[in-house]
Amino acid sequence: MTPYPFRLGTTSYIIPADILPNVHYLAGKVRDVELVLFEVDDGPGNLPSKEQIAELRSIAADNDLTYTVHLPLDLRLADDGSPRHASLEKARRVIDCTQDLDPWAYVLHLDGKSARNKASVETMQHWQEQAIQSLKIVGGWAGGGQKLAVENMEGYPLDFYEPVLERIAVSRTVDVGHLWLDNHDPVAYLRNALPRTRVIHIHGITDRDHQSLAHMPKDILRAVLDELVYANYCGVLTVEVFSEDDFLTSCAALKAIMN
Image (cartoon, rainbow, N blue to C red; front, top):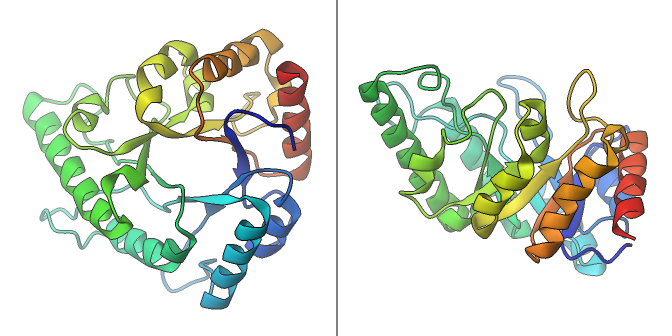
């Protein structure tokens, strides 16, 4: 494994199998696995059993491995302002299921669709208060707000989440791929965000995102990695792809630049 200053990671869907075979495959290749969990109402889900959680803990202990957990829905309160919204209920089930893994972070999205497109001052303030309340509730379940890592989403203004982040002590997930997708400079964004960043997502862009980093020009990829090294970033860098070929070619692209 290449000794990067950060904890190189990827997702739990690299080979066509369930979570445990993927973690066994990735052990020794990465230092963090992003557990992509879902739960369909009255349908299938992939939340690990207690026995599987115990095995995941054992794999982690034997391989200097951590886990990040991606919560399944954009967080929001119910329309009446209560925590009964499905996104919060599912977040709690995921947190309860995975807390024995002591995750590096819980990655989450905030549902801001109602406020992102030239919303009135009142609408924006209402959304911000709801977002802060959601984070307080979920942070309590997670064992502290710093375990929560709010991710920047494509299609949102760069400063959209800042008023929320200024008022509550949560962490950040910087998705470099989302910034590339919106034609923003990730280096400038990282310089502001890194002091609170626990997780970074990176993935290549072709006709869509979450592709191999081999598709990215070397100078663009190098600029991001140079910034992380300069800042001595020691958090998780997740190569957020979902196939073995994209994972292996992304690792080769990183190695070519870091060596």
